Length: 544
Image 1 (spheres, rainbow, N blue to C red):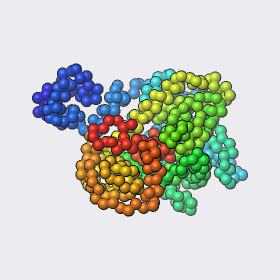
Image 2: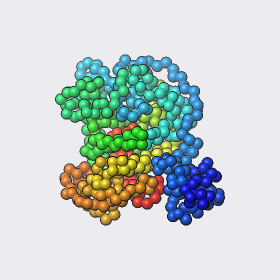
Image 3: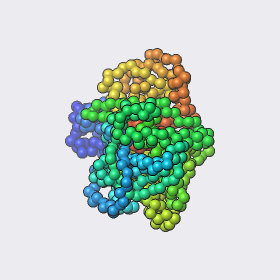
Image 4: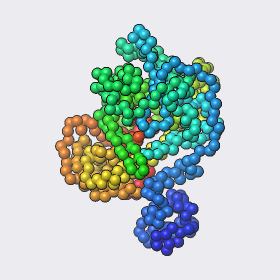
């Protein structure tokens, strides 16, 4: 076997166990000993040797296989399921629409606006309701609980729920879909919330709007002037006004907690992959459509968190700022009772708006539905009772899986950034200093450690890329020239660099085309270890 490997051929005995040999080997087997010996003689690594003999089709396949053998050892296919029957529901007298990226298929949320006279409007936030067809501990729940979340990576995803079930509950246009709707009655004089109401119903979905079709038409200037022609223009204009008020209120609350205002002058990146060619599109953070969706989702998650708290029903909450010391305050924690989320500027925050792709949201949707249907008796009949030990187990399992999936997404985004460099034949690039010895490219969200480079944050530099390795995910580069740091650049990096200096973490700006692991504005929840990213100077282990 050693001779065959050295000759560039895969021994037949190794063919059925390539992934096992690479990532979960039994070191007592002859196959592993042969692979280890061949690697020692050739002075290479098992992954590189397997690539050279054709045992793995590509570097991407190596990254995929390492993740899948750990978290999906039985594969990603779903068992056969029987689609659930949903009982009759009232049909809402609204015309709702969603706003998503072109790649989104799990459409969780939609909106509606009704004029109700006397300077008031009724805004509907409609969330897909798979909890109507899934019961705790049934076969579909077992699938969702095992996966805990949809896994996202550029150009692909592994869904939490089977496709046929997603299609049954996704808020696709042209039909009335089951939804849990939060209605807010607003006074248009000051955009204050007069009342809220939650209803379980079917919601007619008129349109699934897409960013790529609307972004060039819907900007702050066009909204201020009322110019342009696009679907649901009046409703979007009204939602934009409310979203700005919601944001100001959150920022005031955030400042009352002693935190600085959120920075919206940075750039997010969307990844699109087709036929092994990647496109990385820059998108300004805080664009109007993003802000509308983000603010209304935060409002819904906070409102439903408050509803569960007032009814005495436990839920799964995201909290921040409850610890002592700066690092503890910045850490996002998951609890089963209401507590402030200082980073978002809300008194409580329960993930409830993505039940098709996060298990925590599905659990909370069960609890919210119990509150709606049973009122003050909800604690007695909700699927999860107060102090239910199983709820704590879910929090722990979700936290672990969600972190691992985020790590994998970061790895694959780094891989596709390196692929972008290769396909673009780029050798000289602009970068910006995040902190001492850590830079990020301007055109793509690729973080590069540069030992010895010590410039003020926000400094722009010109780099020459010497080499990069898609397997190790490493980059070698040298500085060609340094630009004078501008006030605007320093301000743009200020909050992020402050987080790095104080806690060793950074807000993630690496957002995939359908990243819905986070709400668009909830960037502070997506803090990743910048040192973990920067430490990829040799064969990497999983970040964090």
